[in-house]
Image (cartoon, rainbow, N blue to C red; front, side, top):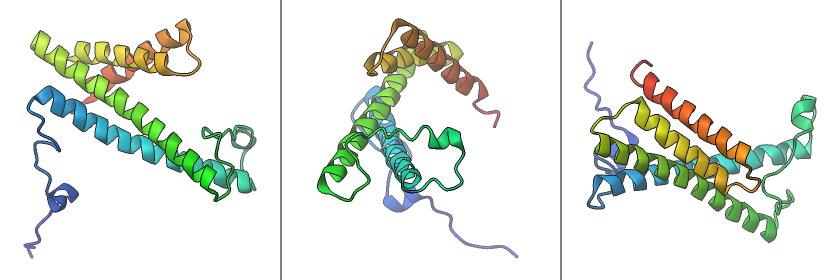
Length: 172
């Protein structure tokens, strides 16, 4: 028994082209913009869900382990858990900030990997490692509590994660 059902993705329904969301005239600009938009959306969702979780934990921590109860520090200091205008404004402002940070990280990484691929003529783990290291260092520099050790640690972490992702591409 065969089925003649047509399978469509969300992007097919919306009408996006297969090649990408944007056509800004150059593949580098397209790659950076698309990465920024996607990661900014993920950052916004992450920020809102984290704050919702922390608000729920604050309102009642019945049965939560002490390691979660002890670390109930909200990343949005202006939010008091109330539904007032100041709390909503703080949520929107801080969600925007988180979105931009995620988007910039993705855009920098995407632009670096594209540029290195074009300059070296090959896309390999070395490009990923260098782009990850530079992106990690850039993120550490933009953080509030930056130190030399933190910058080096973030650069190494960025290089390790992006290299692992590159090496594992196609395996899973």
